[in-house]
Amino acid sequence: MLLRYAYPPYPVGWMSKEVLRGYVEGDDPVTGKPLMQEMVDALTLPLTDEEKNPKVAQRPERQRLLKKDTIENYKRMFIENGWTDGMPIELPTEEKVAEMLTGTDHPPDEVVGRMSVTTHEERYEYTVEKVAVNAVMAGARPEHFPVILALAASREPSMPSSTTSFGRMVIVNGPVRNQIAINCGSGAFSPFNFANAVIGRAYTLMSFNFGNARINENFTATFGNVTNYNNMLAGENEEESPWEPLQVEKGFGPEESTVSLFRGWNVNHLGMSIGGMRYSDRMLEVINGLQSMMPGGTFVMDPLVAKNLKEQEGFRTKEEFRQWLFERLIKPDRPLMRPPSLNLVVVGGEWNPMFTTTDFVYTQTVSIDKWIPKSGIRMDAKPIRMPSPVTCKNGTCGIR
Image (cartoon, rainbow, N blue to C red; front, side, top):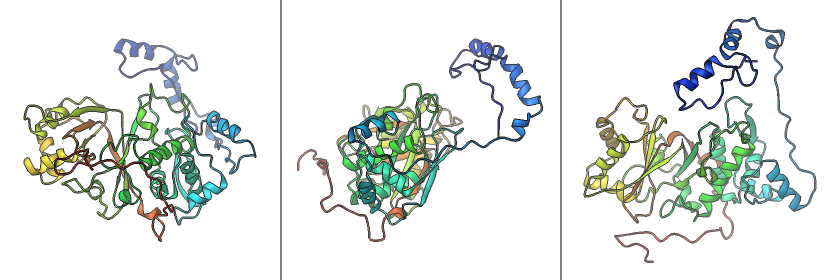
């Protein structure tokens, strides 16, 4: 379809009524024509011949291989073409991509999905091989490939375009967490784990190369979001959580491995019990003061908080606690508070009984298992591992 567009000046969000009235009574900044007359004409004038017979624009197909060149020229080319996040990458040679493809049984030419960072552009189609290219660039190994394929299969970019600045959170559940050493405990959202870092980065690179993210063309964030670098990727600490894991809440089995995606703007508040206040009361207080346009939110809590809510305050399930919160809201009609729009995720190493409040809304959960080879996850002879965190047990922290 050839649609008729009229453009007001920008920005429009949070501007005064007087400014917005001036926009309406003024001219379209693109065409120079009076904005309201342009809108009336768009709605009432007969279609032109061009509009009756639109030509479908198609982007040229991207070549599979680059021409032979030097390593330094390739590195420059990848940066200057906007194929990276600006940081050094592993060049995706045919040999390295072939090695990455051993991380799944799915054929290289199988279509995984289509993606765009914006709603008004063609969605790029991508295959298993193209996902492997981005996994190599991110520094991942074949053991990480099933999780990266699951993220690609979501068809959601890690940085959806908006004039605000969206971020992402990715939570991994199920046996795959321990098989490939995803950090779920101490410093899980920090840069201390290989798997968390490379999988999260591969998701960002796919948003550039499949979603076609281009600054100021289709990605219009005011100042961007630092979480897009590795997308707050962590595993849920299922072993120390007193409640059922996230993937079970979303309809999967406890032995199924999944990735769950969240989208929002802010990590709003670092909370704790103050002056003997119950955690439930403190979290209710935080939610009642939360200012956000997002239609939901997520509490990320250390296992100590979850255990306190269950063992000391009597909330046997996440759903019981969620319902308790909803019943006590000051403004229960707020879009934020529509069950089950509030999610509860347990992550952390029991160093402190703390929680953080985010406006990240849940979007979907995707299976990882379908991408794992029948013979099991393809591990290196000696898998790469960063130093493992010291966990807290029985009230003792930091002692091996």
